[in-house]
Each structure stands twice: as structure tokens, then as C-alpha cells.
Image 1 (cartoon, rainbow, N blue to C red):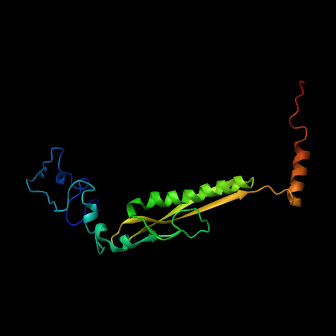
Image 2 (spheres, rainbow, N blue to C red):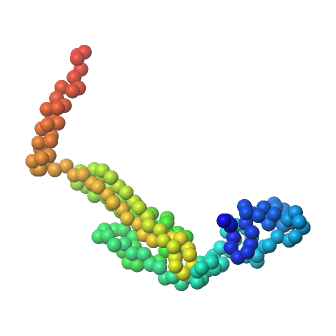
Image 3 (cartoon, one colour):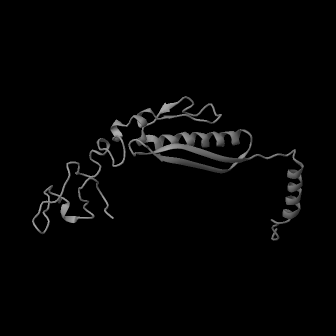
Length: 178
């Protein structure tokens, strides 16, 4: 299995003689032949958005699908971002979607504090996808799940539980030395 660049160029991990040293000079193979280097090879990450990945229609810089992708919140909370559809670039989608989901978490803690509740559990998950046109990975959305526990003194089961706790815990913390 060949790892590294596509279109005939050699990866330094696969063919060590096709790599350049720190001075920028290309090392020759032991047999004296020139290493096969494509026009697109170069430093890692250079020109990544200008190249068309194998099997895809366009480069990430020219991708119309990525330019037109919009995000919108589907919750009933009015004070979070993206209530109206908005564009997020694939490069910043992870941080932007995570910040949005943290707004939901903050709202859950605020709601619990207003009604003397307690946040029992909170989970944020992000979904990722690959653009079908250019092959760029991006965060496609997020979900926040929270569980809030509220004290309910009018519930007969809650009253019974408190009475049982009182019987069980009575005398548990006695200072016999006093």
C-alpha cells in the first residue's frame, strides 16, 4: 500500500530517496536516476485548496457546494445563534458548531438555576461529513442532550423517599465524645 501523495509522486515515507533534504536539494536515488516528482509536490499542506483530489469534481477552493452550504438551528431556544440560515466555511465549522452547542449547554444550566434544579447529565456530539464535490471533511451539525432534575415537593413518591431517607439517616452522624 502506498501512502502519501497521488498522481505519480513519491511519498518520503514510501521512497526515502524522492524526498528533499533540509537545504532544499533533491537527493538522487542510489542508481543515479532522477526521482519521480510531480508538479504538485512540495511542502506538506502547500496548495492543498488548489488541487483536485482524486475521484472528486473540483478543488476545495472552487467547490460550489461548500460555498453554498448553510447551517440553521432546529431547537426552540430563541437566544442561540443560527436561527436564520447562515454560511460557515468548512475550515471553521468545528469550532463554530461547538460554540453554538455550548450556548445550548449554558441555557440548560441557566434554566436549572432559575427553578432550583440540577443538571444531572449533559452531552454534546458533533456530526462530520465529506463534501461529495471536493472531498473536504467538515462538521455537518451538532446535538446537545441535557438532563435536569427538579425537586418536586408535591409528588407523593418524593415525600415518601424523603421520609425513608430521614429514618435511615437518623443517628448516622452522632458525636459520641460530646
